[in-house]
Length: 278
Image (cartoon, rainbow, N blue to C red; front, side, top):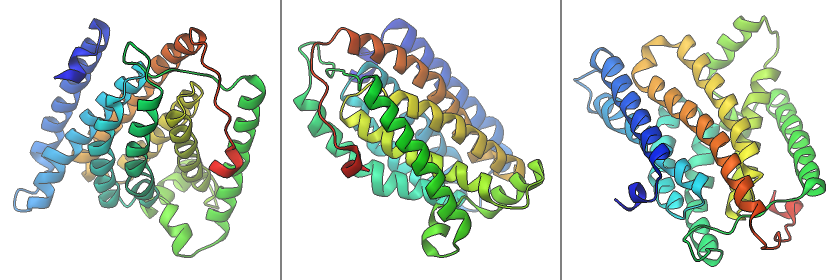
């Protein structure tokens, strides 16, 4: 497999351990948690959930190395994770994966092919301090504004981006909240951060990893709350939590790799109109 050949020894060990953990959690939780009379339950627990986790990890490991293969693995991951999000009622993730990330994979393939170096790795760049502060500030403002919209209005659009009601109820019980604003902030941050990270990734900018790290932390917390609110969903939720933990570790590894890669590149940073992109 070409993807396997592109990994160094540490990365092969890391992927192998992750796959073993994913398979183990699938077996442990799916043996008792699967309704074998339901083909959908069998497919979700034994096929879709573990394959989403494994394809997702290979995708992000290749992204950390700046290999274009990340986008080829990102296609099945976006589809599979989108299906899981539908089952879990995480409609914001449905939108981000099937409407945003899926077509973005094809845009990324075209863009990265134009920026490939001789050694088969994309030419990495950085935004620079001033542009990074501008982007980070815009991201925080966008999250707060979007959270206000999600918490203040109740219509089809806001319902699309809110996590399932069990999540909001459990979150309110855990923190003694009277409003849904914290849940709205979490929902808004995952959407905004992923959109920005995807744009920065296509542009081969190292700052993407800061947004991926933030997204992973929020997603681990969100799916953990969903598991607490509905323990019967463990058979398909636990592999997804494992996937996000793997993403989190890899995002730190990716930031280190891309920081080194960007420092070694002499390629100028592309001019980006972020107001138009967002």
